[in-house]
Length: 182
Image (cartoon, rainbow, N blue to C red; front, top):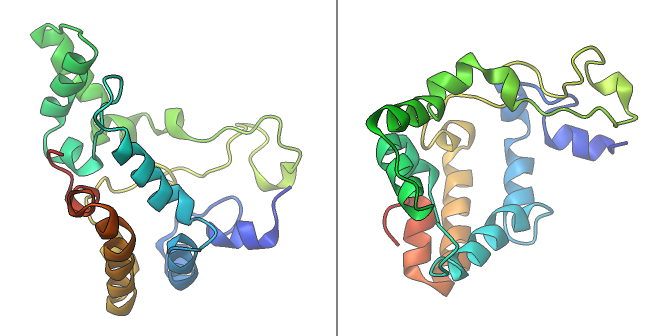
């Protein structure tokens, strides 16, 4: 079973897809993901470790913003990395299946299922789903976090990025923020 603190961190349990649930917890969410926060490793350590491995032959480092800006190009990049030749039809089909529109139309495929979780009063026993519709596939926008945090919180995040990522490699900081070639 999950603690009340854990449940509150995600806007209640099951997690809410309502915007107001995110607004209430913005400060706590920021504190938790900042360095030394309970979730800091989910971002900072994760990005740093993959950055260190980016030149390994079996690693393809991708950035969400690059995929959103050029999904077709990202599909081509992945196919090339995997040494897979796609026909124009296959490329088009893969690109369409990776689109935000396709994810929205098939949202049930992206919901978290917890059939072995004993906390049965917290999820839908009929569907075995934890998160409500529109809880995973949201806007698909780049930079949506700016709508959640106030100016002071955004500045604290920027300083944390500069302190942690920028101190390792300015290119890492740039890539983590914006994507692009690395």
